[in-house]
Image (tube, rainbow, N blue to C red):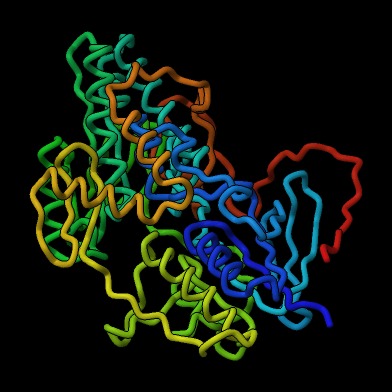
Amino acid sequence: MSRPRIVIAGAGPAGFRAARTLVRAVHGRADVTLLNPAGHFLYPPLLPRVAAGALEPRRACVPLSRGLRGVRLVLGAADRVDLDTRTVRGTGPEGEEFAVGYDRLVLATGGGSGPAPVPGPGGHVHGCRDLPGALRLRDHLVRHMESAASGVDAADRVARCTFVVAGAGHTGVQVAARGKPFTDALARDRPARTGVRPRWLLLDDADRVLPELDEPCSRAAERVLRARGVEVRTGTSVVEATYEGVLLSDGEFVESRTLVWCVGAGPGPLTRSLGLPLERGRLLVEPTLQAPGRPEVFACGDAAAVPDLDRPGEYTPATAWHAWRQGKAAGLNVAASLGGRGGSRPYRHREPGCAVDLGGTRTAAGPLGVRLPGPLAGAAARARRLAATPGDRIRDASGRTRDAMPPRGPVPQGLARPDPAPRDTVPPGPSPLPDARGRPPTAFGPGATTPTRPTNRTSTTTEIR
């Protein structure tokens, strides 16, 4: 009799922990396969530090081969799931198609990281959801500060030193909190002729920053942001992004060459393809993390809308901390469904206070509801982050201590786009705002075409057993 086949799609915080939990729970009684486009685990809360040059990129990653011994890794992105034949189909790193059969499936692919849904050319829209995006953002900040220091046109220098962050969740708050000191340091090293200082705006249509956390923690984070010179504007969103700046919902047009899109993740393509009920793009699951009517399908992390048992009618927020905990719960429940010890248990986890690492000694943290002063709050936030990061924690802690030393001046690595190109946005039509560079309107939408590279290769699907 063949052993049960368990397939996990995605190696984010939820997928990684689910795989590690399953290997320990099944004790070799099942085959565990992990599908992921890259061979490493990435801890997303560390990406703002990478973008601000405060952390080496390798510190935000853990090789899957080191952290998941006993798990079979298949490089590739899961594209669709055939629920009737219990098959996951995907595309490998070189475009080859593959198919993997399963007896139990864990969806942990996270939310979608698609284009920013604002009209207008999106050449200045950046993200911070993956390692390449964080590195490109860092190069972009350095390049524009250098251009502002050597530029001749005063208005252009001001626009290059103005940075707009859309979304005041965990990622947006950390990007703004760390980006402002980073660009301030660049301005001190490369002073502009007219003394132009970096300007950062943090926008959100909610009534406060970090709306998913409690109000005292939100107020503490906002105080830190304002103390660092970040302009916080709640109840305000981006209406349009152009080559010359962004149009805000209050009617103001901010001349800027940078828009960092940190609004919550949208629906992922894999969850949309299932044909199962969704809640704002996330797969609706039962408290045991199983899809209704499909007990062999589990979902966790940003891909799942998990009922919050402590707040009936609501769902757990899409945070890395919840994803890490849900990954463990999914792994234990999958093992239980295969005849493991105990039965399936509902996911219930009360957030142990807030902890948002904003860098430096001024941080918003309140573990177990206890409000801590600046240095202690920073230590608590870093300890919590280290506890949720897999791998050799002693090596990681010592490495991050070295990273905290005053770094050398950042040098661009050629990752930033040298010239704005229309991308990342899908508007209903051409931008109504003029393009000051005299470019013709850009074609968007279903009728737009994208040049493709000719190929003579034939498409084949490989079945992975």
